[in-house]
Length: 583
Image 1 (tube, rainbow, N blue to C red):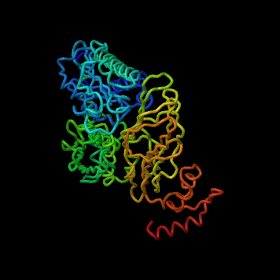
Image 2 (cartoon, rainbow, N blue to C red):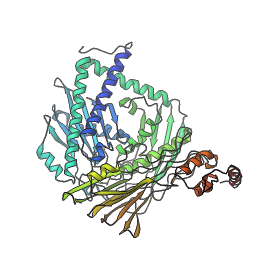
Image 3 (tube, helix red, strand yellow):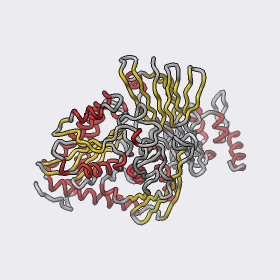
C-alpha cells in the first residue's frame, strides 16, 4: 500500500485512519495518567498529548486540558526549531518548559519526541504535563515573583531521552532543583512512556495502511476540519463585539489589570484583538502569547459541534492579535507563573464579547480563577520532604436553559477535584471540611453554581502554604439580569481562635494548630432571579444550597423556615412589589 492515496469516494477508510490516529493519542494520554505518580497528573489529569506531522502541524490532540490547546501548538515547533531537527534521532526526547520560547509557565513541562518510520522522519509525538514542583521560591513553584528566574529551573530544550533511554546526568541535574523528587521522577517517566506508546501505535497504523495513504489522510483531515469549522462560523452574526475583563491585582501591587477584547466575526473567520491590554507587570500575573491563544481558541471550540476535530485545520480559522510586552504576550524576563490566571480571565472576556453576538449560547461568568494552592514541608511520617499542589473548583455560570454546575473546574481548566482520601493517605494533611458554600450562587432565572469550601490542617509539622488565585475583589458577573456570584475568600484560623483574612496571592507558614480555609467563587446568574421557577428555589433551600433569607431577598420566594413549605400567595405578592421597584 506504499504511496496509496485517499480517493474521494472512500470516506470509510478516511474515517478509519482518522479515528485510529485519535485513538493512538488518547491511549498515550491514558498511559500517562496511569503511569504518573503525582495526584495532579494521575488523578486531576493536568496534562495533554498530541501528534504532529513532519512540518510541525498538529494532527490530533488528546484533551485532558483545553488550556493546552495553544501551548503544544507553539511548544513543539518552537522546541524543534531551537534544537534543530537535524540533531534528532529515533528514540530521542527533548524536555522543555521555557515560557519565553512561547510556551506557558514553568510547571508545564513538555516532552517532544521525533517519530521515525523506517529511518524517515514522519512527525513528532509530544505531551505536556503540569509538574507539582519545578524549584523556585516556594513548594509547588507558585509564589509572588517578579521575574522568571525566581520561578524554578528553566529548560530551554535538552535531550533527556537518547536512543529510548533517559540520560541520567540530565535527569539528576533537573531533579536536584525540584522538591518532591519521587513524584517528579515518576511523572517524567510517565511522559516518556506516553510518547513511546503513541509512536508504536502510529507505526502500527502506517504498517497497515501505508505511509503515503496516512500522510494523504492527514492532509485531508486538515481540509475537512477547516471546511467544517468555517461552515459553522459562517452561521454566526457578523460584526465587531467588544468587552473587557479584569484581574483583581497583580500580587505585588493592589492595582487591577484591565484587558480589553475586540472580537470581529467576518465571513467564516474570527479575530480576537487584545490591543490595549496593560503593559506586563513586574509581578507573576503575565501570560505568554501561547497562553492567551489557548484561551481565545478554547472559547471558539466551546461553541462548535463537539465532533469537529482539533488540528491544524481548526487553528487556521482563529486569529489573535496580542501586542508584545503586555500582560497577554509578555517579554523576557517577565514572571509568568500566574499566566493561567490571566488566561482564564481572557476566556471569560471572550465569552462576554461572544454573548453580545450570541446571548442564547453563552453562559454567565463562572469562578474565573484557576485557584492554585500548594503546600510542602517535611512529612513527619517519613522525615522526607514533600510537596502538594492542586487547583480548586467553583461555580459555573448560569446558562440560557440550565443552572450553572456546582463546584466544577470549568472552561479551559477542566481538571478534576482531588479526592480527600487520596490526599490524606499520601500527604500529612487532614481535610477538616469539604462542602458547598451556601448562598454563593449568583441569583438568576438560572442560578450560578455554588463554590466550595475546603479546610486544611497539617499533621504534626509546619507547612509552607501558597495561594495563587484571583476573584476576591471582582466577583463573577451575572448576565441578562442575573446577579453576581459570591467572590472567593482565603483565610487561616490561628490556634483555633484568631481568623486572619489573607490575600489571594500569598505564601505563609501554617502550624499543626492552624486551619487553612478556602472559599471558592460561585458562578454568576443568567436572567432575572424573579423569573426563576419558585419550585426550583424551594428545591435549592431544601438541599441546603441557599438560605430562606436568600430565597426571599434575591428570588422573591417566601418559604416557611420551620416547615420548608412554599407560600405561593406571599411569593406572588412579593415578586410583584420587587418588579415594581425594578429589583
